[in-house]
Structure formats: structure tokens, C-alpha cells
Length: 332
Ligand SMILES: [Ca+2]
Image (cartoon, rainbow, N blue to C red; front, side, top):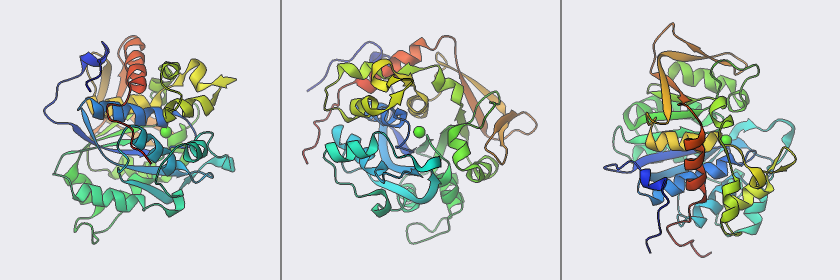
């Protein structure tokens, strides 16, 4: 069945081939990761993206990040996407478990195991990259950078005769990073604060282009209430319903959309009508995770700012996040 396309979705960029995406998520604390995975599936439904694999990058006490990913993949009719977890990755400070991941795990059908029994994220990354054509993969990171560092430091193995550095150079065309703040923020941004050593490695040694989206971008994009119009058995809606935000839930009035914006940027690129791009410099990271834009030495780094009003981006993310799945949800 062909579903009606909403006006903003008609503004889709016509592309020759879908963008091949690896999604690296801390599907645990904030529900914008759930919203971002919804946007990614919606873009795949539109033929703009091909989801290659998911990896999780934050150790959540509920041990259910992979299950939450698998539940959402199944809702969108893609239950067989590879999902890997980082076993020694960044931990949530204070050990507070996710407000939504264990509930999604328990209320919805899926075939995922607990995070500590899932395939290694590094294995999933190396296997996925080795199987793809050169220069074809877009890496979208919306959490800690631990998996990127692990990949960068990895050695040749049975999955590929290439080192991690060589795999990145050969296979990844663009890496989009949600993290940091531009200009410099008072406190280090959460994703980078989780594993500053990994950030220092990535900013200094990642061989390909990095496109940064700082905290301030998502903070201006409030979405989530659009999900009220979706079915009650939509797990993304459920994640927003469970996530507290300023005395309400994220479903009531929405919340900032850091990760959804990063997915949009990864798949559609920095469309000039929506984004300003700042280049000719590099991101510098302190040992505490603070980022700063420096023009002292040009690397392949850029960062984005919203062009003009955030209204168009907000509406676009809201529509994509609430678009009904094109495929029938897979039965358990
Ligand atoms: Ca995230």
C-alpha cells in the first residue's frame, strides 16, 4: 500500500541511491535516540537511507539498550538489522537506569538478548564496513565516542585484513557527530563528557571528514508531541511517554531533538536551505570533554548551525518521527 505523503515529506531530496548508515546510539537515557531511530527508519521507508547496522555505546544499568533498538526496528518491519553493544563502554553516572529501555524490552516483541550477551559492537562495525563498497558508508554517532575509538584502534582480524584506520579511510565517506557545543559551553556536553579520552582520539586521529552538530542545535528543536497522533502501540511514542521532562513527559510537550537532527544531517546532508556550515578549522577537545572550534589548523572538520528560524527543521523532524511505518510490523 502506498501511504499518503505529507507536504514536508514531499520536499524529499531525490537521490540516486539510499545513503548507507551505521547508527551509533546510547539508547538509554534520553528518548531522542528513540526518536532518531524513528527518523532513520522513516527515511529508509522513503528510499533515502539504508540502515546497515546499529551499535550501542553506553552501558545502561537496565541492560536493555539493544532490546529497545530491536523493538523499534521490529515496529518498522526491519527486525533483522545487526545490533552490537559496547561491553566496556561509558557508564551512566550514578547508575540510574533508563526510563524507557526496560519497559520497551518487556512490553514489546523482539528477539534481542540483554546488552551483555549481544554481539560486540566492534565486531558488528568491522563486519559491516568490510562488506560495503569503498567510500559508501555514513557513520552517525549520537552518544559517547567509545565505539569510534575502538574501531580506530582495531587491528586486522578474520573479518578484514584492514586495520580500523584503513577500514575508516576506505569505507566511510562521512561521519556525523552529535556532541560538543559551538561556541564553547560552560560545561562539557554529555556525550563527550562520557568518554573524553575517546573524543581526543577521534578529533586528532579520525582520518575522514567529521561533521559536528553541537548541543545548541537540538536544544532549539522541540519535538515529541507529534507522536500523540500515532498508535498507542508505537514503541517510540511509548518511549516519549515514559521519559520525564521538566515535570511532564516528553510526549506531552516535546523535548530537544539532538539525535533526530543528527540523523537528518547524516542522511540528507547539510541542505543549504536548513543549515549553515562552518569549515576551515578543527574541533579541539580538552581532557574533560570541553570542545572548542579552532581555526589554527585546517582538518576535515566542519560544524553546523541552524539557518534562520528552527521552525522548518522542527516540523520536518516531527513529521518524520510520526510517519507511519511503510512496512508491516513483523509478528513475533
Ligand atoms: Ca543519544
